[in-house]
Each structure stands twice: as structure tokens, then as C-alpha cells.
Length: 285
Ligand code: AMP
Image 1 (tube, helix red, strand yellow):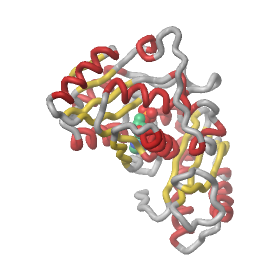
Image 2 (tube, protein in one colour):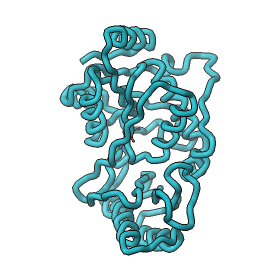
Image 3 (tube, helix red, strand yellow):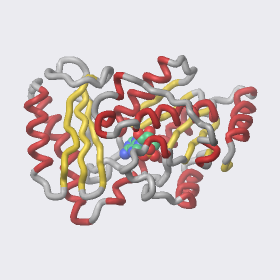
Image 4 (cartoon, protein in one colour):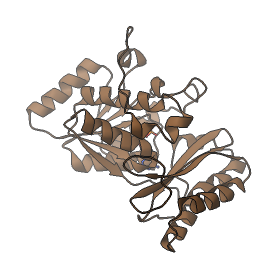
């Protein structure tokens, strides 16, 4: 497994692979791996001749009062885990390599980023789409793999790839969960033992929403009300949002007629957790 730290080296490595007709699969990450990341990498391994991942905690997607400074990092552990799942290259750039002095260009996907986390984290998606666009230009992948756990991010990336005519396939992978249902996240390390049980209210409330939908409920407000009440009934929780949106436009819907997603963002202690469920899909909890 190679570790590449410069843009120039990454680009020439990928260019060489492309010239030799090799298919490049790419998983962008911020590191501190869990099984969800590793599943994306395994999919990359299956889909490409060469599997590339990046580890980069991207400052432009964090707000001034967010957790950039304390975001968990452990490169040695990540390196070992990536090697175990057969990753060929870790692209591990520095801030200076990514945003050299004078940097001033950003990619902004508009409508689909206006709602949900776009409201509670101003500038977040601009940072995400900018860094992903840059990483795609550096790694030159044929296929890239994203998790549905960050559903709005996935929609924004798909939109950017379509709108900017990027010659790239975007593959979505289901959310990997702990045995008790908690969506895996690098941020779960922020949870204190007494907060862990409250964190389960997210996935359990999604299960409730699914049950309502399966029994024929199509009124979004009624589902949202139940979900909010359930989560709010747990200590240490503070709801940021509970919304039901169209999966293409990410705008709120009042009735569940087309394909819709229920998206949650909840603070549990100091951790801001997100989770979601696309109605009609399986939910293994
Ligand atoms: P991150 O490093 O957390 O920014 O995530 C890197 C990639 O892993 C993104 O495509 C995420 O959507 C994906 N991911 C994070 N957590 C999970 C999970 N529990 N299941 C599946 N994919 C995930």
C-alpha cells in the first residue's frame, strides 16, 4: 500500500494508471475509521483495479464553532485498517497542499444544500463539494463511493457531478450500524457512557417512522411529531432538526407520495449526530 502526500504525485500516479487502462475507485474520508468506512473501501476494492482512499480533515467544511480542532484522528490505526481491506493507495495531503496561499475558488451546489444541515451548518456543503471536486481532480477516479449515512452530502455530490459534467460514477452504500442500531460515526467517540442510550433514540425513532409508514401513514407532520416526541423524551438530547424531504430536491414534503427521506440531526451531549431513513427501503435494526 502506498501513502501519497502531494497533489503532483497523486495526479501522476493516477494518470499512469489511466494510461494503462486501469479503473480507479475512490473513497474520500476524514479518517478515524469504523466499519462504515471499511465497507465503502471494500466496495471500492470490488469496483476498481486500483482502490484509492483519501484521509483529510477538511477545514472548509467546519464552522467556526464546530469540532475541527478536536475531530478524532489516528493515522497509524487508519493505515493498518485500510491495508487490511486491500486499499492500494492512501492519499494523505496537508492543509498547505490542499489550500495553498491565495486560495479563493469554491464549488457551491445550490438548492439541495439549502435545507437541513445547510441551514444549521452554514458553509458546510460549500466546503464538502469544494474539497470533493478538488480530490476528484487529484485522484482522477472512474468511480467514487459515498455513504447514505450523510444523505444530503450524497445528493449534493451527485448533483455536482451531474451539473459539472464530471466523468465519474457515484455509488451510494447503505448505512453501517452498531449491533444496537446506532449509525457508526467517527463522532460517536464524543458520547459519554450515560449518553449512549439516548443516542439510540435516533435509530429507534427511524424504526418508529418506518412502522408508521408501513402501516399506511402518509402525513409527514404526524410522523415528525411522533419522532420528535420520542427523541425529546431521552435525557441529554437536543433536536437540531427532524424533517421529511423529497430525495431529489431535498425540499420538505407534507405528504409521502414520491420517494422521501426522514432526516434527523440531534445533539447528544457534545456530539452532533445525524441519521436518516428512505421510506420504503429496508432498515436493519
Ligand atoms: P467521514 O470520514 O465520516 O466524513 O465519511 C467518509 C465517508 O464514509 C462518507 O461517504 C460517509 O457518508 C461514509 N460513512 C460515514 N459513516 C458511515 C456509516 N455509518 N455507514 C456508511 N457510510 C458511512
